[in-house]
Amino acid sequence: MRVADGGPWKPAILPARLRESFTNGIIPTMTITYKDEAGIAGMRVAGKLAAEVLDFLAPHIKPGITTNELDMLAHGYIVDVQGAIPAPLNYAPSGYNPYPKSICTSINHQVCHGIPNDKALKKGDIINIDITVIKDGWHGDTSRMFQVGETSIAAKRLCAMTYDAMWHGIMQVKPGARLGDIGWAIQKFAESNGFSVVREFCGHGIGLGFHEEPQVLHYGKPGTLDELVPGMTFTIEPMINAGKRDIKELGDGWTIVTKDHSLSAQWEHTILVTPTGYEVLTLSAGSPPPPAFVTAAAQA
Ligand code: MF3
Ligand code: CO
Ligand code: CO
Image (cartoon, rainbow, N blue to C red; front, side):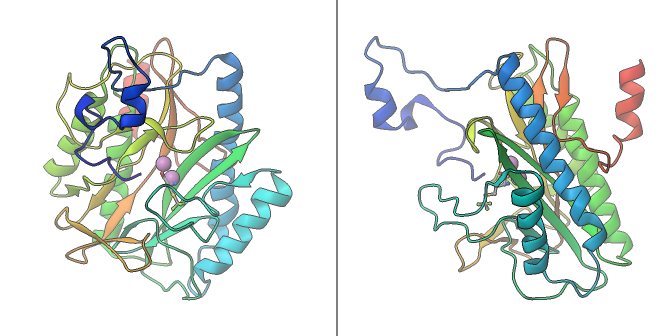
């Protein structure tokens, strides 16, 4: 989601509507929701379904297929097989036109929110497919990178590094850690490998709402911002560019591309803060395994 004007919520930029609802001199800077056992159960189901849509699409992602065809396949699977709702369809946050499709497909220099169309994928493309489903009111949000046929070494490296960057962020998640720890881990890893981190879009709280607080920035300083508490659910979804971090929005009001037309990659998981660490809610049989540094840390 787009970072709110002025960056993370600060009292000074709280909407008047929220400011007025507190009369005791205290202005809350966040309205994070915490999930109880029933909420967590709902989030687990929604998360797995979102991941399973990606498993279902994976074998279809080949040269010649159009993103509209992928959108129609996903729509049919979500609605008819899963009995769920594709959250993007007609999603209209303030300032946006309703999103016209059921999935986001962002190819090559497209950073995020690419709208499916009738253009065919071609050998060498890299594509992010971002799926959000609603099941019994709960949202699951996840995205992966896919390679269309054989791709360049540079493209493969960007996709692999972005995957690792996401996991460096996930590994920070435990009670008492702070949101800034997540952003810092991602930024440090990405930049030390010569890539840049998109600043204008961030991860987000998620639950009965698609985009809840807090904002989960993919850059930052350790020990800053909100403390993580068991029951929080949010996404981590770094957008990493091979070139400069600058982006621009296309005339369709949705598609974001890199200003320098360099390749961009993104991966996304929905995460639960548990009493001891984290649980990834958007795993499925077809999810790529966590990187070796994650499994090594879990065994240590
Ligand atoms: N799934 C995206 C995210 O990770 C949001 C897409 S909004 C849409 O937050 F309307 F473009 F679908
Ligand atoms: Co998201
Ligand atoms: Co998403």
